Length: 112
Image (cartoon, rainbow, N blue to C red; front, side):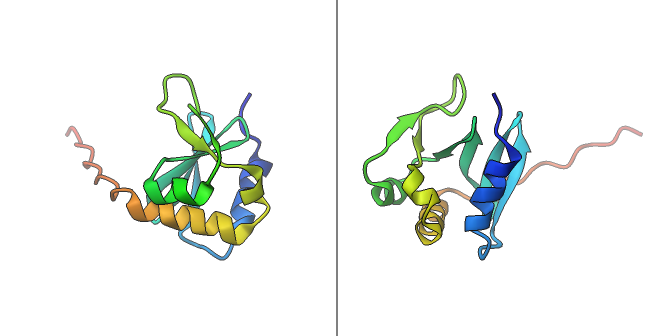
C-alpha cells in the first residue's frame, strides 16, 4: 500500500504558512523536507519523524517503527499532532534545527 496524495495535502495544509516545508515523492512514498532537510517520511499514510532529542521531547509518548523494511526506526507522529497545526509546525522546526545540512550533490559529468 502506498501513501495517498490526500494525506500529503492534509499534512502540508496544516503547515501552509510555512513555505520552508515541501514534499517530494520518493520510492513510491513521500519525504517531507524543511529548509532542505528531510525531517519526516510518510509511508502507508503514516507520518514518521526522524528522531532528534528536541523532536522526541515534543512528541512525548509515541510509538516507533521503521517506515519501510530495512529502515532505521523513526518516531510515529501521533494523530493529535495532525489535528494541531501549530504543534506540528513546532515539531518540524525543532527536528530540522538538529539535523545536519544536506550534502551538496556532485554535478554529473558529461561525456563528450
